[in-house]
Image 1 (cartoon, rainbow, N blue to C red):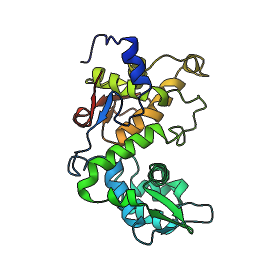
Image 2: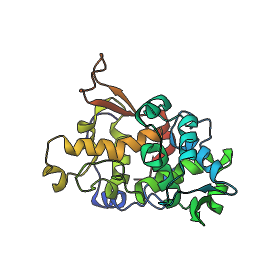
Image 3: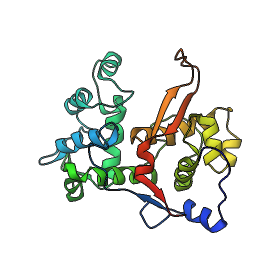
Image 4: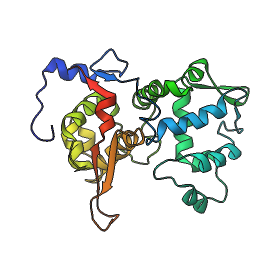
Length: 261
């Protein structure tokens, strides 16, 4: 449904808001997706590359606990991550550290938070859980674990510089449900945010009018796009970068996420 109103009882809304995405609440994740199903996404195919590096002896960390430069530079060449082409990353950085390559920075954090990797004697190694999710046949489970970790344990503000307090994580299951209901057609981030979030005083009192929807774009839509659940396009036919981008859910969205409301 792209238009209309979704009516929820107080009990239904409360169940969505308090959902931990653990399968016990309204949002259910399909863990049976195959690696082929996820081939065009960003997170799982590239996470498996990094996880393979961490298997066995693991990867040496720097004194500050970051992925070592040699590994990061190899990931830049091997990753296929939308928005982060190797040529551009190398043009912008004479040497490439973890902080210079957002996909590596994100995956390092989310793998540890999800219990798939741990630091041991100066190296980052896969845990037993990580090893179990590395085989190709576990791709669907890996997608579910990393998506759940991203929205329930990871700090979605970590990769942006917006000063607005985080207001989306606590209502993420409701947001996901309403995107499923409303977002079949292309919508700009501001209109989509108004359709799928509960208004908060932090958003209403933002320093600039565009801060709330740009924060929504960075802390919700960015990650959904990485997982292949949202797609984006430029609003202007001439690819005018000053025009807001448009978003809609992908076919994978309803294959992965279902809701018992």
